[in-house]
Length: 318
Length: 318
Image (spheres, rainbow over the protein chains, first blue to last red):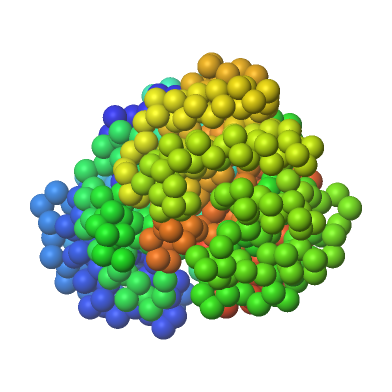
């Protein structure tokens, strides 16, 4: 075990949570949730997706949400995009942008999620790089979606993941870019702790210069165990969603749990002595707000179990 | 990591789930749930508590449930008891009994759960041993409740846990008994993966002859991560509850998640190549049955996320 001393939490709940909702969450409610999350100490909030309103109507108000939020000084407000048109919208909006090159390890998921095969997605990467460059943004990261398994294709081999990273790095290097980080996305909740360890070890051994980040889903209950395994390997950056919001509209079983819950993950870190900068009380307040906005109990545990310091006074009152 | 090749799952859902319900679950529904669980491959089902109907009315039908179930040949049907009168009831019923000596690491929890201080509980152990002996049952196990933390007392130090084990072993040895196993109960969901590893290492170093078993709650979302850490240390026996039923009527925050879910834990084992003997499809059917009986969605994930082999046909139908 070599735990990091500090981790970065990317709060993705507003984006992951809202994108699947039908009817869409009201713009004002999205803004209220982001404003509350801005006070929790998370350093990054991913709040919008610049995708076609035809395919994802729940994200049609991306620009309006970005305009409407109250920005905290130490928070970066980000979004995602699946094609160059989406990136251009993000550049035109007031949105923090990491130069990211995204590819899926699964061809079937790539087709379903972006309407492009993996080869077509790779072929579009130079256009992404040029668009970033024109905006003065270096390529900082590679994202590999469906890196641990796919509801459409089944198990994804480690060789396939390494080969996808190779493909993207080759394109980046050919265009004079030096990504420093790779994010592995367990988009459909297939990972297990051993696979996490094995995958991290293989990437580190091949590309020791690359930082690793993880985007984990708790679809089948292993999300926090996977995060714990990754922390033990020293991983320092995680995507999480308040309350365990999330899921992928093109991938998840209806009603499946979403991303790992920010509050459960931050609590794990606190228990392991790893700093997150997050105020758990405020985060739990945000879970309550999210449950009111989404109109249902969310899967995260900590808000139901209670912080240790809350438990004794509550029991004394019973 | 030194995973065991096989683990024993003690299914405690009927006992842990039913004991906190108000109004009580109907006897026939308890029997139906146990009968269904008997077909899943779990080797042990803990289905009743021999406790005062005055304090735990939901368990007043313990004998009736034991009489009513259809017994599968390879399943042991067990119950718990908190005092010698309860043990005598268990002996009179058709209930498999392990010679177990139980003590709490927390004095406050002991008082709340059993109306005895730890010293009083220790003082009663010889009476347990004599009662077991009269029935020809050797003392096989020590249970330490609240071994990782307590909602009433806060953090429980490792020294305190070791000292409690010492106390109980001294009494067992003085009466010619040789317990071979110690079960650590995270009764109120305080454990974290590092604490699990540290505690296991300390017990192994002091008493290498004792097997370790774990009873984990998922109160704050770390239950499966704790189980994963324990599997990595070679622990071979776990208490789990179908659907994540459970909680302790004297301990938990109202509405807190319960034990680790049997199906999520068994899925973790399957993914790690560890045999459980459990049929996950049948277990997921039991989650559905339990949700109908308890009238609510249970916290376990796998039934919502779906087994990998179920996901693709379901998606094809959408």
